[in-house]
Image (tube, rainbow, N blue to C red):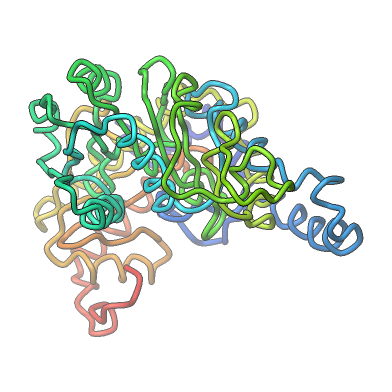
Amino acid sequence: MARTRDDCLKLDAADRFAARRELFSLPDCVIYLDGNSLGAPPRNVSARVTAVVEKQWGETLIKSWNEHGWFHLPQKVGNRLAQLIGAEADSVAVGDSISINVFKVLTSALGLRRNRKIVLSDSGNFPSDLYVAQGLTEFMADGHEVRIVAPEDVAAAITPDVAVVMVTEVDYRTSRRHDMKAITKLAHAAGALIIWDLAHSAGAVQIDLKSCGADFAVGCTYKYLNGGPGAPAFLYVRPELQNMVQPALVGWWGHAQPFVFDLEFVPAPGITRQQCGTQPILSMAALDAALDVWDGVDMAELHAKAKAQCQLLIDLVETQCSRHGLKAAGPRNMDERGSHVSFHCPQGYAVMQALIAQGVIGDFRAPDLIRFGITPLYTSYADIWDAAEILTSIMDGRLWDRPEFMALKAVT
């Protein structure tokens, strides 16, 4: 553990990722620890989007679909993302939102297990995924049901009646990380398929979908991948399954020959059949540019830095603030965690608002968690030290105890 701020500065000086911080646009006097909710903008994105608007859309107009490759951006960007999540080439498509992609891959998976009725998930899954599954099973009204268990009970709950196991790899609250390889193996042994939500994994931890044998995965790109607010999500389908499945939500971009305008849907081969409608090209171009900051990044090395920084933050906060009731949520073993740290804090919402007022940006998750995202491409060790010092001063001085910090905002 770094014992002084100078120790942190020495770690930063030796950090192989330190130079990447300059690739991002970060405000002065702000410690940004919320990249697990919205990543900071890479500096090159603005110029890329401006060029697409002014030079491509503005000058080439509709010809840009062909001349500038707009139509194939979902696959192009998907292949760039595949390298960050250990996926095979041509197995990832970018587009839509996570919720829509969950619907697509869940219906694809259920179509392959028509004799089973259970979708197994856990209480650490992101609620929107559960809502999609609940909405689907209620609409089908044919005996399908969503079975929700505690995260630690998933393995034991994979019984022969389970059609699909659907879990988020890293818990958005506690940062608890499922063992992807072990859970996938158990699902397959029981004859079930598996869907992984990588929203809090992609760009944060080392993932190897191929070696784990994952069937399906979804994820967003506006968190650790820095694609911007509302950036398109992604989905993955194991190559052996791609031509065997068809989602319930289909559209012309997933047709084998979309510009024939056939009245009957004929699925395109491979991952393309998972596409639905026309995709947001400006957002797609922004994401494509944002991925430049990942060129040459070794995910194992990045994950090692994330674990070291998470451990430092836990050590500092619990040493200095445990007397105020702050305690880290989730496992103590860094190999069982993602790249964010949450602390149970009795006055959590007000404390986070006080932190933000002093330039430390994290977020709050009900009922009592203050949450800090560690984004190793631009988070420094000095950031961690300074954030812990500011949090300590707020707790020691009860600086959170002000009416303006207790007024609940729409986004927490």
